[in-house]
Image 1: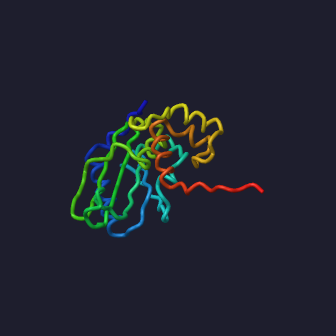
Image 2: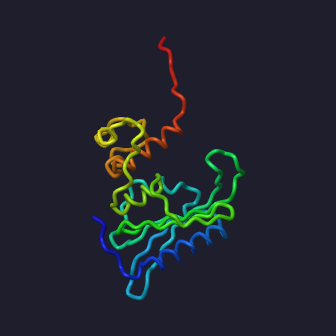
Image 3: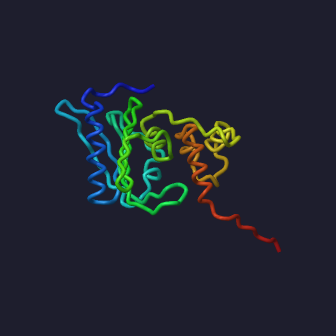
Length: 196
């Protein structure tokens, strides 16, 4: 169950933090993980450079300390329309997850600023799981029993999915489904061998 957070972490503070992080990433590049600890004299913001690593890879299996009320990521890259009809544009993306379940987002794609936070995705899943929060349910389209498959991996089966049993146990069904589907798009072609 989400835990209440400090009153200083209101919507105005979170929006200001998200925009400040977006601008810092735009000016300096790179990517960072960020956490916020409420203090009597004001929120304490900590930043860890990602040094080129993918946020989800850094976050997988992480359990945030109890005093961290907010965990987030700010990163930059390139964006293009899904139908590939337009050109690539520079983009900055910030996602902050609050321990009470709120999600704050800020993104810039070219000249467009988006303040609507994402509903789901591998990175937001990992932020939510690190705070002990549930994630968006698995997609309904694939006819897969994600709970049973995750349980199988958590018990030590199916190492080809790229998850340890501990990782599978840390994920919930929704985050597990998106991690597996994302990994499956990166799997190499099967290798066959002939016995002599």
